[in-house]
Amino acid sequence: MPYAPPGWTWPVEEGEPMLFITQINCADVRHLPGADVLPSDGVLAFFGDHDAVQGCTFAMGGAVFHWPETSEWTPAVPPLEILTVFPRAELLFRPTLEMPDPKSEALASVLKDNGQREVYREFHAALQSYGMPDGYEYTVDFGSMLGWPRLVQHAELELFDVDPEDARVLLQIGSYTNGREFGDWGPGGSIYFVTSNSALAERDWESCELTGQFT
View 1 (cartoon, one colour):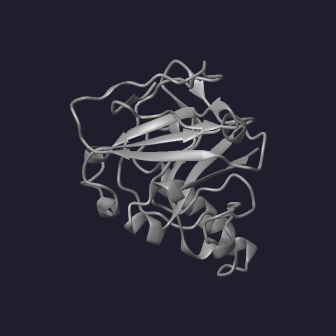
View 2 (cartoon, rainbow, N blue to C red):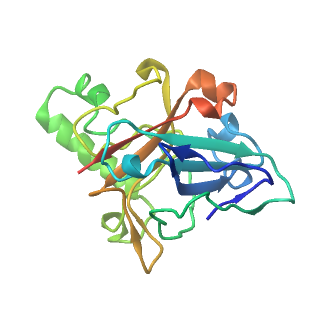
């Protein structure tokens, strides 16, 4: 469960408390390339509607909050019992070179030849797993912040309010493990918190949209 400032109200979607997804300490990522678009301190907290993160609906309800540094945070308590509590795991960040997903329309518009796309797919996979222990890349999916979306399906992300031409993936999380338990979304897939470049520049977290792709 998250820690939150006193008086904070847990987000609710259609009468049910949203599921807590993760918290990110902005100080842990501010040294990474590209992180200057994020707050330099405080915590970003991510929540999602139960049906949305389980792949049961196309109406994706989510919420993102930024809480400045404070010494008065307390354990947050939802107004009702949470339907799902995901396995706890630490987020580890490292700089990577981000490139379009092999299944993306952006790549298809450039590489028309199947042989070229296969070479690119192998290069993209090697780039993602660079520096990881052998075999680890097949254990869980990789998440990312502020990069190209890593697609599950051969389709672009479905967005409702954010203009695709101005979209920016704030956070993507796929399946994961803490070494004892596995966490996943619905039948398997990734969830994406998407914002626009303009909203990100204005620190407008309410404009973030949750979407997902599932197997």
